[in-house]
Amino acid sequence: MHPQTNKVPENAIAVIGMDCRFPGANDTRQFWKNLVSGTESITFFTDDELRGAGIHPETIADPTYVRAAGIMEDAELFDAAFFGYTPTEAICIDPQQCQFLQTCWHALEDAGYNPYTYPGAVAVFGGTRLSTYYVNYMCADLADYGTARFMQGHIGTDRDHLCTRVSYKLNLRGPAFNLQCACSTSLVSVHLACQSLLNGECDMALAGASGIDIPQEHGHFYQEGMIFSPDGHCRPYDAQAEGIVSGNGVGVVLLKRLEDALRDRDDIHAVILGTAINNDGNSKVAYSAPSLEGQSEVIAEALGVSGVDPATIAYVEGHGTGTYLGDPLEVEALNRIYSRNNPARGYCALGSVKSNVGHLEVAAGVASLIKAILSIKHARIAPTCHFNSPNPRIDFASTPFFVNKTAIDWPQGFSPRRAAVSSFGVGGTNAHLILEEAPQRESSRSAGAVANPLMVVSARSEKALKELAGRYGEFLAGQDADGLDLADFCHTTQEGREHHAVRLAVVGESLEELRSGLDAAMTHEEWTTTNTGDEHRPVFLFTGQGAQRSG
Image 1 (cartoon, rainbow, N blue to C red):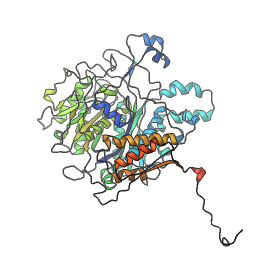
Image 2 (image 1 turned 30 degrees about the vertical axis):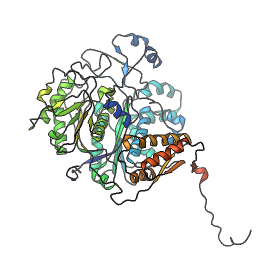
Image 3 (image 1 turned 90 degrees about the vertical axis):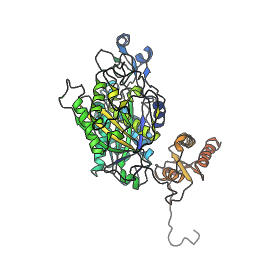
Image 4 (image 1 turned 60 degrees about the vertical axis):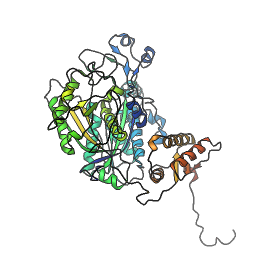
């Protein structure tokens, strides 16, 4: 519902969970800290690092070789046992697919849903890059093994199995399929997830993408007029913009029909009011070139579907490749639509996450979406890195847009906070999406619910339990817990989490008491756990007649 009118927008979709791992950030909290501080998370490699990754010495010595990329930390780490894989099976799976599976799990946990007990149908939509893990590591090994190992390697690295793997491992029964449309893949997956929900094909939907090169430590060759940057920095909309730098990452959002999310009292991060996708056709100079007509049409369609006046949108997270030709065309397409019957100028911020983490290719759209959602949630608009003066081919003064160099507050206006997200793929598949802030909701206590002061935490091992308890303590001590409802919080730990063998319970009448209880448990020398694994299953013995007699 609109925060001001309490009216539920028609065909709106709630974002109720999300998770990401991007350069410099292993979760959404760190991602937001990096964004709002204007942090660029690009790594510049040494000769030794490049040699260790197998880069040829002649390549390293080439003066046009730019040794930079956005690195995703610990991309090779995967909790195989947690998902029921043996080490032999896990080594046959592309890290892109491993990280997508883990991120889907975390997105469900963020929403407070246990996939093994949720009764509805959950869909999965996503995509990956070409598997460089298969090319660089698996091909030679598979030649020495038989048909069974070859099949394992094929299933573990082929794109076709990304989403169905998640459905199988998490017991999800909604539609599950991959899509591939280059840079717009993940935002198109969000569009398809929204359509699946509106068509009644599922009750919730996971959507996103995973793009990770193995090894990650590699650069690119610069050639004037091509898309790659000469110095490893991406400068969207700036006069010095000369191209992109590649990045690695994975991001997933969990979606639900807004009316269902309100009924189920879900924690709503933001609301998707409308989405649209199209293709340029051949109305452009080359296959990989952008199209003014294609971009304008998809923007107009998304606004039409959402029923939103563009004058009420205060932020656009652009595609923003930072190229001399692409940026002006993108702004012209936006201006053509956002200026219709709208004389206002310079009121709408325009930015691009590529200045922070590089171009994540298939995962670029979901990175932009998560950034826009976080901007709405925190009521702040993060700066675009490296923006000093505008591209001379962009006349911002005649458009509704401006690029902010520093973080700015986003005050509440007459309408809800609204943002838009663009993602355009090589080959011409374009996507545009309209977001709105989440509606205000009544707390459980004020709605008559009784607060349950019992918080439960569980994990597969004592070490993992201590780490998880520590993260809960950090959360409760941080600003993210401001305004958190005790009843909702404890209910989620009890009902919205899978309960594992090693467990801890804390009782408290307030969030502060829960945090203190966790701190005490963390520092207690005799850590107490209850192991409820298979080896300690209860057994009931019904003896029948004669039990009252000895022997």
